[in-house]
Length: 216
Image 1: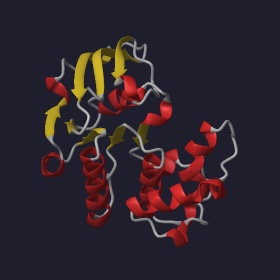
Image 2: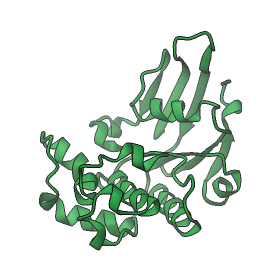
Image 3: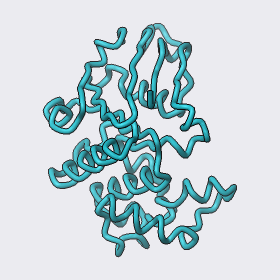
Image 4: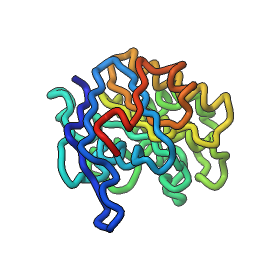
């Protein structure tokens, strides 16, 4: 087992009822599982729970014993890069922030992690000449490449990607899915959600619909 969600139920405390009801799934180490669902079905909520960003009403998230060292073993790639990236930080600071935080610093210090930064940028095919720029100075595709580098810089055992290629061009989409696929081949458990079933089927080990996992 790499990542398992057991009997996840969640709602937002209103009359609309549960967003997720008794949902379970498992992603093995070395597997890339595609989660297909239309917008509004609850897949983003489920991935946020899997990443530890949202606490479910009930149910539990389990990871391998080897992954219980801390949050750095889970990499999260968001759907909306501009909503996720701090506009005050350069791309270099954004990418290396998880490493700085792990050392107890609230202030990113990219110069300390130049080797890891170079490796992550190469994996994400991000032009290093962009590292001194801020989010509003790069394109959506370039920013998502930077967040991909941030996701990979900690060498995570679990990678969770929520609609990572929404509204991106073909080349960036291909790079992101190929990189996620390579990460799975290196032994990580990768969970990626998308409404693009064809792309999921092209790259993922297997694809499952949210409605097959216990209800939504």
